Image (cartoon, rainbow, N blue to C red; front, side, top):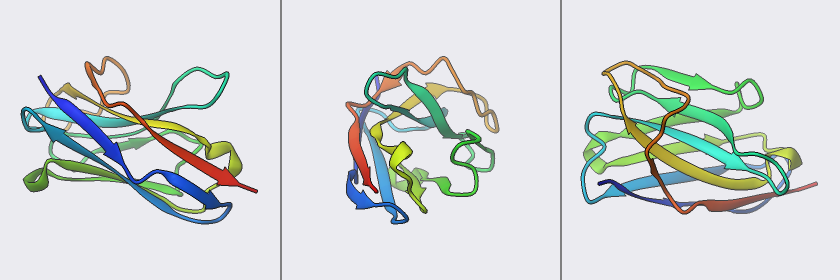
Length: 124
């Protein structure tokens, strides 16, 4: 069982930056790909980014490509989402999630473990 805790959300003006963190407890992220998802009010949850177990492979939604960067520090059991050039449409609750996956595999679905989420609000 993996427990995930997100942090780093907050209120920021358009064009600003935030860095989200996702830390695992209970067991490590070993053997897991980790993804970030978000859900805006009245909308379905959507995929944002994911990183492979190795950290070498990453995948981004088109809406965040070039602005967001996902990374991981396996020694710290932590995955980060650096968000730059934020837009009001990035406002959402951001969730991290984990699932077992191959060394360089970056799945976009099938995540089994989820955090509670952290609110990101971008003002115009």
